[in-house]
Image 1: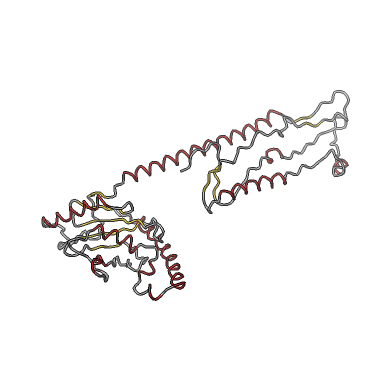
Image 2: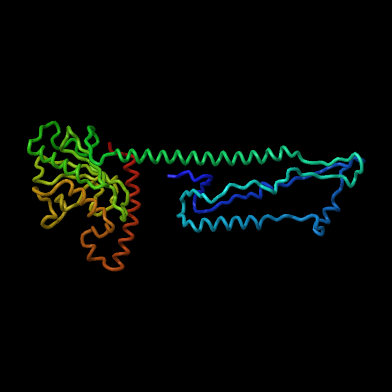
Length: 362
């Protein structure tokens, strides 16, 4: 969100630009005049040849002033420590002050050639002043538009946050047409009462105890189906990625674990998440495990499955999820391979997000 910081200027990127107020005052004008007596143009060649040695004609080199402005501007950016590509609102960029160097009129006189009846030749003061007024007005309009855009962006951000707050972590929806298991389970059949009660208990647990980064949708007309979106944990190559899973509670549930399908988009970004959609997890009995690592009908829950996927699969070093790698690659070699794997996984995570956006779940 970009707040209104008064007369601020928006600067994009890590490179810095600067305002050159000297250009307003440094315009060059060619002035020619005619001798009233002869009508011929005055030849100024001799005078020009004497410019270098005449103190009356001094060339005002503004380059030093420009360099000072640039260095001052660069120093301000260096203090901010901005990452590349960031858009920054810079409140310390002031609007150019009203220039005291702007002459109210620029005049030339031919008094040396005329004693009586001669008049001074000058540029119209009104047109010059109107020019600077137009520039100032344009600058003010640009600042106002910037402030207006800032408020609009802030309003948009606030609207997004309001929608996010209203977006429930657990909710019941009606459309399951794109669910992976829509043609399986109790489709068109009445489930047993004991099974129904167990699913309702699962819903209550999920509604009460879901972590902030897991979202679940269930279906009144198909209680055997569930969809979950898990947000990649911070500090992992999956950070803030959205990973979609479809779940089927089989007729024999909870004697057997639920079936889980992962929407991979054809990408293998974890040893435990296959590109075919298979999820390898001890709690699902799809991987080896000891004791309470495996599914326990009387105590295991769907919440445990979702939290385990987030914590055990989408972890900071998924390279070592591959069986045997933790013992095979140790020390610096293991760290190097793990880092390289994470870089690849991060790219695949971004591609998965693109796939999810193109085929967003209902």
